[in-house]
Length: 225
Ligand SMILES: [Zn+2]
Image 1 (cartoon, rainbow, N blue to C red):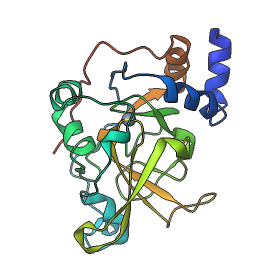
Image 2: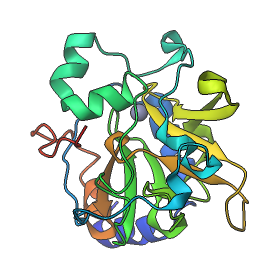
Image 3: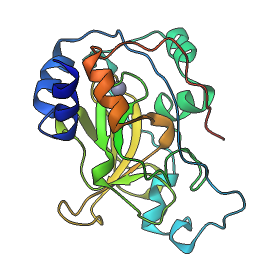
Image 4: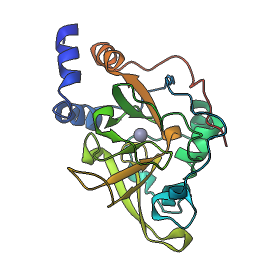
């Protein structure tokens, strides 16, 4: 694939999902991260009413307690390998089903065009074209890039019934999906920034063109507790 084709392919998502699915089903754990964000959450921003603990919109702000069957994931690492790969904040969210505070995370206000990858295995999970402002302070999407990449589990922790979502390929916890989202899906994927890394559309095209290389550097920006 030459550069023009790669760029073209990157613009045709989710049509790209099919070949990527084949790639993901065949590829091993040879992935890593780079972490960059163009979003800087403002300091001191008050948490709006929508994020009150008893508001359903804020339900993403509570951690999960589902049992993800890691024996079914394609990408498996030892705990030491996960800790070496992820920042402490990413590990707590992605591997321990934690959560991050609203408006104090990397991508809630990121309006750049591009693709969000799994922080644990680089699977392309969400497209900026499907991102919307939910008012919750977490990055929210109405549609995943490819539903086959996103696993769902019934989560009954904290006295409510939620649907937990995780990366099917590596088992990293992402967040939850709710049925109060906008058209066309009516869904709201409320996702932790710590579970994602972002590539601009251009960088994503370059990354595809280069054969989805494993990045050399560990993510540089830990999420705040
Ligand atoms: Zn993953």
